[in-house]
Length: 460
Ligand code: PEP
Ligand code: CO
Image (cartoon, rainbow, N blue to C red):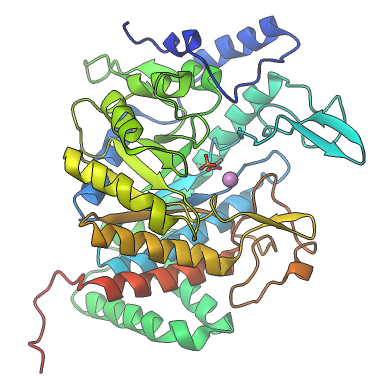
């Protein structure tokens, strides 16, 4: 069967709503979307793939992060700026820890639709369809709000366009220059109750920057110090939307298909069946594809999915995102890593330490920061032991001072959860927790091997 942007429609599809009351209205919105401008360009998508190929080769590190679910309510310039600021600070710290360039990919500008564990939600004896993300239905617990409304797709498209516009302005306009990011990072270290612990690494970064400046490497003459590359990503869940955003690249003359809704798309834990719609759709687009790997995924199934998505073994095309939980990573990941290694396939291994570490406390979904860190450490240890490369991390985080994950230097407790719990879906790391984790992961990266690319003084 030949691939087309709509060939997924003849496959079984999980987690795509079928209960739109007016299917003609949905089709009309999809037609409008198909005629709307692309959000990203093929050249940018190809460049991200090249960057990810470097990650696969162990020459760069991937940092992917942002909201679990973007929302219409939390959409404003300050929120976008703050998330980006934290992401960039984390990237500086990880650049130091890994001694490698960090490829920065936001979970933003399109991360709306959510697969839900249960199709219904019950509160005080009333059962309604679950909230599925702002691009599908509303979070209010009323029957009207939970009806899927296609107008929400158009609104999420335009919010994504505005978000991306702001990200481009921040990252290219000088605001995100290395000097600024560095001074924000120092501000964090000064404020943090564990500032002492991070101070030493922060000072080393400062020394490195001073040395570079003394050598004449400044934002004025080296563009990498004044600007950053930030890419976008989201779960390719709502395939009607993704299909509408998929265009042929006429410019290059290859006629290849690109999903122009984001630079990178990923396939979720619940929709990765090799013969189903989501894998079918992702197969035909040229974008880098992520895939969540968690409990229940068998090595042979993983290899079949990789073969389907990347038959030519193109480097940078596949990022495998491990999400077993702190308790599961030691058992679940080695067999997958070994199978991929033995197959000779080129992949990036990244760690999502969020989705396998969710528990409920006081009626709130939460994640202990300690478990998040433990999973990243476990991930690095497993891949090292299997002679594979721990290539990156994937976080749900925000720049806001929310209280959704427990622990961290601020010691957010179970009782604190209710004070600033704003997420529309899963609990996110707040800005300080995210940056603390970056320091601790950088420490771990420094510890596992000598990452220095420069000759060193002989020991003793
Ligand atoms: C997510 O990344 O928001 C998500 C739902 O993850 P997973 O598919 O791994 O459960
Ligand atoms: Co989530």
